[in-house]
Amino acid sequence: MKHILILFITFCFFSCGNEKVLQLPEINHSKITDIDDISPAYLFYDLEKDSIELNRQNLISTTNWLVNVDKRLTLKLVIPQIKFLQNKKKRAGHKKEGIKNYYTCNDTSRKNLGFIEFTETVYHEETSANYLSKLSNINDSQNSITINFDKNNKITIVNGVLKSNISNSTKENLLINLKKLDTLNGIIFLNFDETLNFQDYISYKSLIEKADLTETKISNNEFIFN
Image 1 (cartoon, helix red, strand yellow):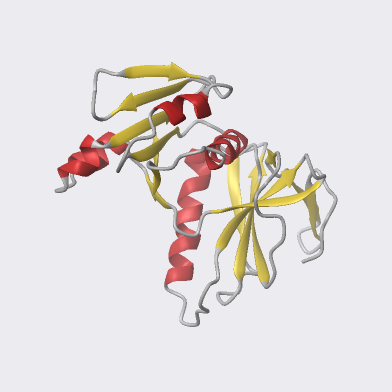
Image 2: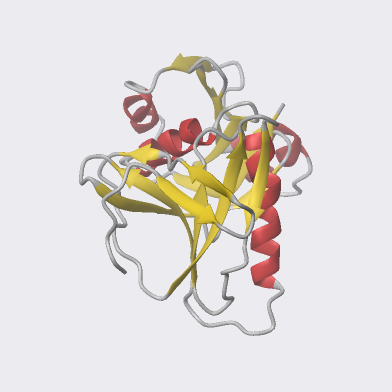
C-alpha cells in the first residue's frame, strides 16, 4: 500500500458538488504501519448537523477493510455504524481467509499512516457490569478488572476480586497501575463513555496496546455506556 503523508484526508464528490473533509485520529508509534489488499470505508462528520455519514461504496468483502473515521465523531454515532460494517462482512457471500478490519490513523511519530486492528472486537452498548451479570461462568466476573474511560479524561479502575477496590488513574499512570494488577487468569474489560470522541477512543486503545501484561488478558468485548 502506498504511504500517504497527510494529517487529514480530503475527499471530493463532484457529483454532489461539494467537498467533504475527514480528519483522522492521531497516534504515536503504531504497531501496524503497512497493509496490503485493502478497500476503504469512510465515516464523515457533518459539523452543521452534528451527524455521521457512512460511505461504503468501495468496500470489497474479500479484502482487508480500512475504516477511516473522523476523529471529531462521538462513539454514540460511530459504534452503531461499525457494528453495521462488521455484520455486513460476516454475512458476505464471498470471504477470504485471514482478512481483517483496521482503523486508519495518522501516526504523528512517523508522519505517515498507522493502523489499529478491530477484527475480533465485539462492541456492546451497555456496561461490562451488566454483561458480566448475565454470564454463567462466575470466574469471568471474579477475575475481571474493569477500566472506565469517562469524559473529562477521568479513568477509573475497578478490581473484580475486591469490588470495593476502586481507584482513579490517568493516561500517564495507567500502564503502571495495570502492571500492578497483572494476575493469573485475569481479564480486563474496557468501558467507554459514549460521549467520548473517536480521537479519545483511539488514544486510549493505542495506550492499552502498550500494556506489559504477562498473565492478564484484555477482553475483545468492549462496552459503550451512557
